[in-house]
Length: 116
Image (cartoon, rainbow, N blue to C red):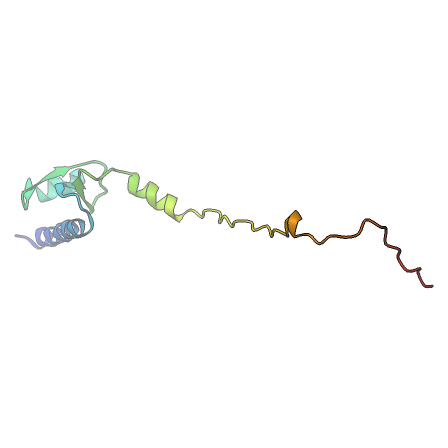
């Protein structure tokens, strides 16, 4: 096995291990860019098919599972990173009800005269 193949094999294994640790859905394929797939030439690794896929950038690997959806990761990351307006509830103090209000006499109150 060449140094090129061993480095790629180690990178693919690390990607597969990371997927298995973080995703509850088991992997069903290893996807490589067609150029990389042609250079490596592996058809299967660890019981998973190794497939060429144009959507995978060169020098990258993608672990495919039934929970995967191309492009959705970027959309989710963008949505999570967007600042959402903070909604603060408005608290309106409530005064005493009519039954709690003090009673005032109906007679008019005379105010003292103004001083100059």
